[in-house]
Length: 266
Image (cartoon, rainbow, N blue to C red; front, side, top):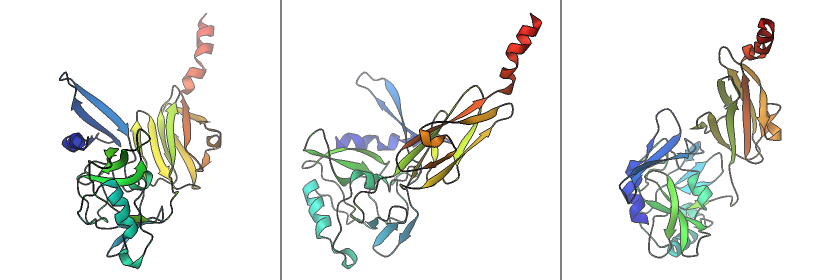
């Protein structure tokens, strides 16, 4: 499993002018396919650093700045973090998969992480999250590209980056899309990690509780007619207490007069 991921990481590339990543791989029949994955463009951040640690000021998590360059089985990775006394602190632990993915920076490769982390191997790093498909696997992140996958706890030793801080932090995701006969652009007043995530869609991640103003600009010849989607979208301002999907409606003014013109000719 790990060998296959390590062989294909170098095929991942950002699609120009978008936050979509794609990977090309050959099937057994020799055919090529392209898989597009929507992702946040940047890690959460911003970071403050000390000699041994990195603090993510958005999540409040404190990270081991430099890994020790040792691969471990999953159970040994858990034990390593729990026994750590880095900077005289005793509450280090192995991060869960959401926490580990929060420091992936998809605008970078080899490794896909902010330079605040002064050492990161282009290989798998363990999370504490066990796979629901079987107790023999746990989730890991391949930091050459940022892709995550299930890795064998006993037979696929991986690297470790310990963390300390809140156990339950989870980002809330806002997806803005467009609909209607008209055209325009969408964005927000506060955008820590927004990116295009597909045709007509714009994705952002926020700390829970953030208040965000939605912005829509109609192109020439179009008009913005309002927001639809989740209930909190309708007034153009959302509170990120959960994942939210909002749609900007754009129309073309001349379509309103077309029936009248047709009736007049008749």
